[in-house]
Image (cartoon, rainbow, N blue to C red):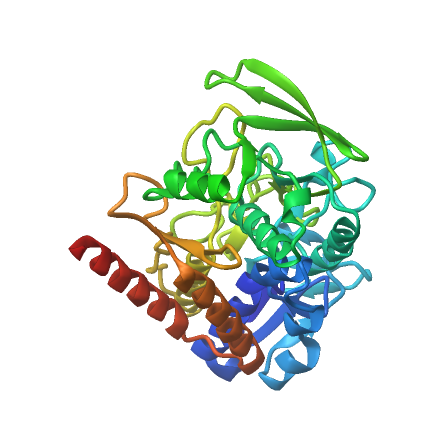
Length: 427
């Protein structure tokens, strides 16, 4: 019997545990190690931040759920990984030994890289965690009681831009519903070289689509922008030209601000030679395995992926949900091969499929593969994206609660996107 440990209880980690249990059957031991007893559906956090959801609607308690499905769970969290002896040291001082390990921790949020950034000790809000989004909602209600300027965006080195765009447009939608939008000037601040770059050099016509949305909603924007520090009510931003040379320093006032930070690897793995890159992300080969420790695999945001291309202000490449599911499936098959004494045989597709909700519409894009040149490079907008995002939330939470692994909805989304693309091409 093999013991497979999954480090992380988020979208990647939980999906990985379910797929392993289904594929390997009951004769192998699977344990999920997390620093929280609950699963959080992070794509819904922008809705939570404006009051369109409450916390209980988008979290699932894990200990009893996983136990019912034959998966062990430990919510102590990992203090340090010891790959040389196949052991995970937990925060309570105990240890878990493994034969195979899947690292699916997600990132450490590097708020500390910008003085004054972040919800804990800083002056900006976040939707990266459900707890952060709940705090952001409190701050948003204060904004509604006393309207003033808003800044939304991303810090230098950020790799996840979709939620920033989503939050800006969802915030705009809610402010208009409350009839106070006219008293809330908004600015979008991003290290991207242009609006809609998304860390992917754009997908389809995302540049024009995102610029059009910002114009229609009267949201100003700064690109090639580096947030240098944040004070209470003031954000200091430097913009650069395409060669990275300084252009202008800005002191932007705000009453409410949500800024996505850059990501790093978590402390439990950071700096382990051969396992991580200098930012602490897990190094993997084409089979999701770490080259130095081939019984260690990794999926999700914690995987090391180089930027798609250089940008004047550093940006990273995002990892979308569909890509993560592909990584999980490949890892599951390759662990089964390893247990059976075979060489790995399955590669992840690393395609990007994203639904970005704007509150009353949205943009969908498909990049096959994620890194250009692409076989498919397409984006579209419409009310249907908002409805599809709601359906995705309901479906994925149902999958979590019932331990389902079949990607029916993911296939349906691809089919729907394909049908939409065909309709557009025929017009």
